[in-house]
Image 1 (cartoon, rainbow, N blue to C red):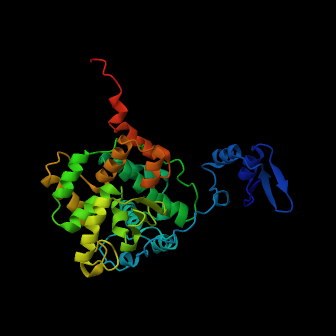
Image 2: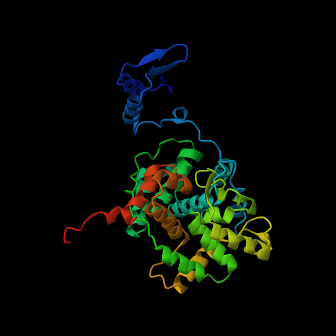
Image 3: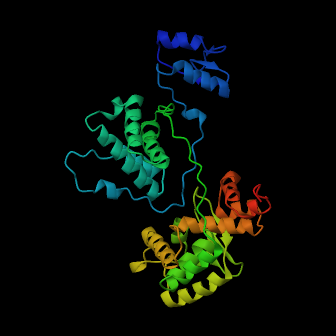
Length: 357
């Protein structure tokens, strides 16, 4: 059943009577109706604009991510004060810590939420309503930001009101931009080989080779440790990837030869690829390595680590590998995500005769 507990109020009582077959429980001292998805929607529509509804009991809490790197929010607390600048509330930072969000997510949420509260710096956060949020989002739209940027701003704002302040579904009606369905950028096998050959040194060559031959995300490559390379089974173990999932992906025999030479020469201590003082290699450095090598190789389009990942998946599909196997190698939660590669694989079109011909 859906139990409805409320402070005595004639308007609320009248609205409850309008619900489908409401009953009163003397034992629990509350009204109740059958727990169905339809009834949840009816309750929301009936009370919308009149009272706040706490839906927490109806949604199981997601398990905490226990494998993430240590969440570092102290940096935000220790920043030098900027005159007339509104900082992220302490309770926001604490909740991010408790939920153990990835540091990249923490940076994104804090950045967008501070942008939002500084837009309304003279207004109390509790008095901000949906029309204020829409006005802020409208201003972002007028700046012609991407749909992804807009969604990140919405997520950061919703996190405060719905998670920090425990006001579930307060901004349920905030419109999100329609998802863009863009085809992945892919380069040819010949171009990939040329990029690898134009790498500055052995370390850079290994980085580019692994991004392509194992279909790794940039963050996954940076988190790799020497023990994750299983040369006996010719696999690479990817730990705590996107969605906090572990998986195995392919290890190229060609890449393995280079990795062995690299390991003897560079002697990494903790991570497979390290910067100074055995710190993890930076994401910006990896991006620069790929871009510079692609320019040297004369590739006509901008190449990023993710373009190499897209190319890995597309080339596997073109060589006849099953879509489900590619899904597992990439670590996609849904087959729909992997299916996009069928739109760029050349063998999809090879058997189609052009009507002009």
